[in-house]
Image 1 (tube, rainbow, N blue to C red):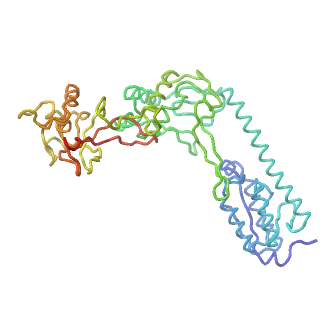
Image 2 (image 1 turned 90 degrees about the vertical axis):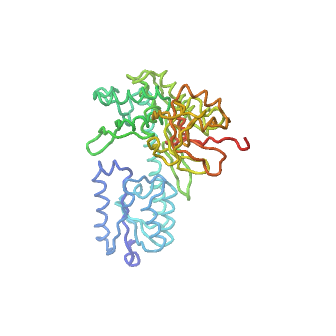
Image 3 (image 1 turned 60 degrees about the horizontal axis):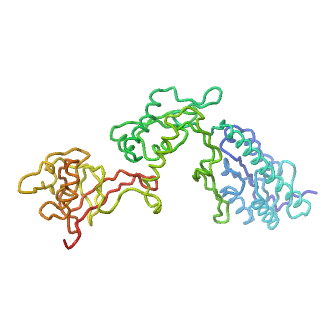
Length: 453
């Protein structure tokens, strides 16, 4: 019985080509050649118009969105396809939803499914039964393979021998153990990051210091030549990952991140790299290898980083932002007020006396050495001198704040003037703490005198 009719040949033949992962594209070229070879078979069977769909190369067929498969379904539904070619059922789909949807549409519009074993007509009961069983076996095969591989990974991770990637600062030895990088420059850069965090107590301040000093940090990149070390100026994420990774404390951890499955537009959507809490880690082996810091230091660093986060609820202290104690223990930076309504942005300050709004403050008719002249880069305050900001320039609003800070800072005025809409001058302060979302967020706030005083 010849299942191929003139109606089928009058329409196009669609060749569906797919491999599941990018690794298969590199390591399994023969499978791809076999699939492209189906074009010759379609022409031998009588089709003149042959269309190849290969947009899904490197994509899994386990239920996630596939542009190529969606285009194939559209061609089948519109009646443009007379036959669908694939070397086997698993190339078309690895889940029941996609497979049986394709079978249903092919049966409705009289479209054949052709593989290396023969020609199948979904309208015929026996062919539909065979195709349905093949789809079920394909889905079952994927589940078994995934279950075996995941269990093998867990057993290897329980021994501390599973390494998906190796953190910068470490290399794998011949006996599959982690050792410190033999490059002295790499080791010293890692040590420097941890020393500066112990000094500043802030991820953001470490990033700012390294950038100010022009110090590059090592990162790992993977290319055609394998694993390589590159040097670049740090960003927040680079330093944050180093400070929060327990591998630098000599610990082996497996299961720090997980995945979450959701349904979007009728398709399975997998969100990966979701951080898990400490109690959800699957494997934690302290003293697994030589660390750059001790486990106790790592725990202490995590407490500091967590405490610096804002908008995490009342149980997290967060960074200082508002209130009478705003200036307590702050590291003040030179600024130039460029905002309005009391909001200022941090910018490098002009030399003393060059800013049009610059004014030196006088307490009793003579210049105060604490408020003029000195211009240490980490002690100047924008929006007027410290005396004017604290209200000691004749108003006497908050002299207690100024007197508390007078012994600690020599302050020079920068950009003076009042913020629009406010009753007193404003200046910017940098509390040096980290934003809760991991970004480099400036923590500048304006300080105003209360109205009516």
